[in-house]
Image (cartoon, rainbow, N blue to C red; front, side):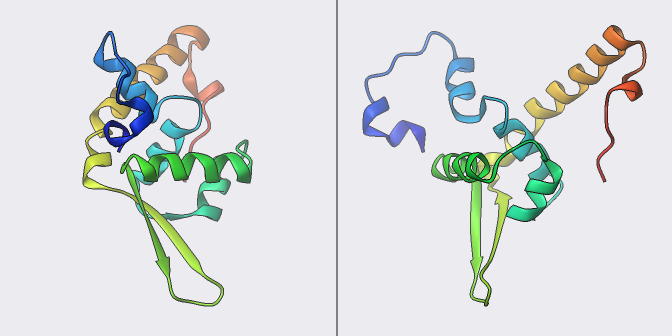
Length: 124
């Protein structure tokens, strides 16, 4: 986890949100977490759900989330290898925060566009 990293041992934070954003901030991690809240996913499923992310970026983000123990990677002993990702119990603690962000974002789209359905795609 982040607090166990030697390079972060001396780091100081002004507020807790800085630490949270360090772990799950950025453009891609919240989207990955959002989709994992609906259940375990393979890399190809995440790529389909987040079409603008590159394979390299997805792999990097998944590794970071796994390192911080937010998600778990399960490898099945099959040919070809099957790998799935899911939220850990620690990762599930982010659900209320992401739910609030999602609802706020929807309200924001309604405010800006009058009707979020004009710009918000529905996921399966």
